[in-house]
Amino acid sequence: MTADRDSTHRAAPDATDGSRSSVMPAEHGRDPKVDARPAAQKGHRAGHRSKRQLPLWQEVFVLLAIALGLAILLKSLFVQAFYIPSASMNDTLIKNDRILVEKPSYWFDGPERGDVVVFADPGGWLNAIPQSNAVQRGLEFFGLYPAGNHLVKRVIGVGGDRVECCDDRGRVSVNGVPLAEGAYLQRGVAPSETPFDVEVPEDALWVMGDNRLESGDSRVHIEDVGEGFVPAEDVVGKVWAIVWPVDRLELLDRPAVFDAAALEES
Image 1 (spheres, rainbow, N blue to C red):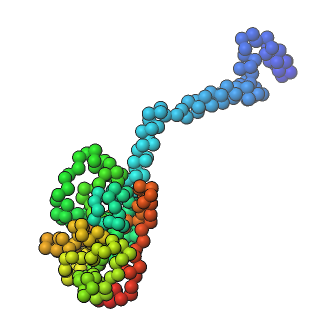
Image 2 (cartoon, rainbow, N blue to C red; image 1 turned 90 degrees about the vertical axis):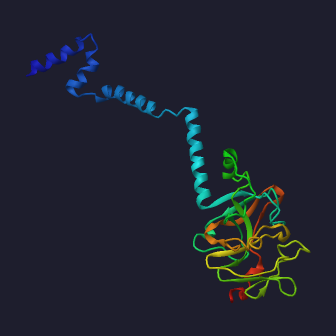
Image 3 (cartoon, rainbow, N blue to C red; image 1 turned 180 degrees about the vertical axis):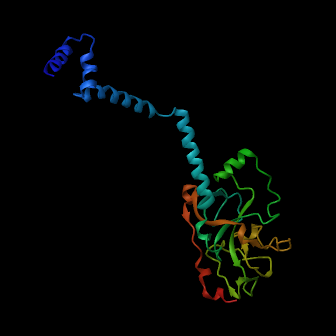
């Protein structure tokens, strides 16, 4: 037994083909680090190759896809940009204003009196506006071109309200309460030169522009099929802010006149 062990140990140093470093640890298990080191290094190199970055054009494509997805999500659920193409809401909103419309306010409840809202054309209100082309629709998506099938007006009456004009002082009344509209109407402009007396159906709105002399609103379409009412489901959202141009930057609030408790009594 002793001779065998001695012969084995004497044979090892005589190897001239590098077997001492490669064979001895495998047979005798004396130094596993020697053989493990190259394998670890190879694994490191393989892992390094697997983490190579995407080509620049692919990274740009991925980033653009993510940005577009976020834009669609934001537009669908939270906020959308629009462009004001006319003077029908002067001086609250003027031509070329860029506005943000927020949607969460109407997730669980409908528009309120006094809100400035953007809504889809109820039918025939915008017949004179030409259809946009593909490029214009793309710009329209981001609010950089007038949205050809939407309007912006102020809600005067909601479902169940009686809205009429005019009283002996020329004022619009809601449920028999005259509105003091000086906070948003231009000075010296009559609340309406067109008399009307309507009862707003449930789930509908009576809307009017702040520039009463140049607004194609509910009054103008009172003889149409929809009798001038806007379905509440057509409302995109409430105008929240003017964001461009910079000197027009402003957050919009609902006028205090619409907070009167008497308006709820019909």
